[in-house]
Image (tube, rainbow, N blue to C red; front, side, top):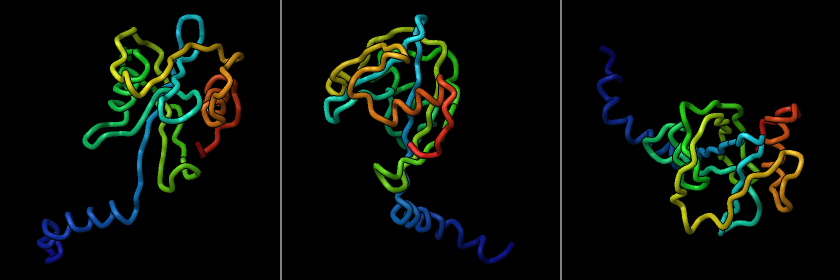
Length: 156
């Protein structure tokens, strides 16, 4: 066995800590949910202006699928039925260098109680051709890419 492998149990935790500090990558998810009328679920947060697809950060020990399912339940009051479908991975460097957002689509869901009471100001269902004033440009672009055939961008 090479001598370097003997050092691995000691060196790996130090390398991982260094990588976390030096790379500074973060990972978020957003969910595209449509109802039977073809309307899109959007949320308005209490801490930032604009309408967004529901979502948030991926917690330690959580998969991205688990994160989007949790965020949809917390923010949107929808419980995914089955696995969400990954439809895009985007760099969000304009907001935070090293940030990436995964966009999922959830086609089957049931309503549930939204558990994020103080984070969400409003929830609404909107037709893709009649999105609310104040929708963020990135949210509008992701909807156009997913539903309208717009050219996908690697940037959020």
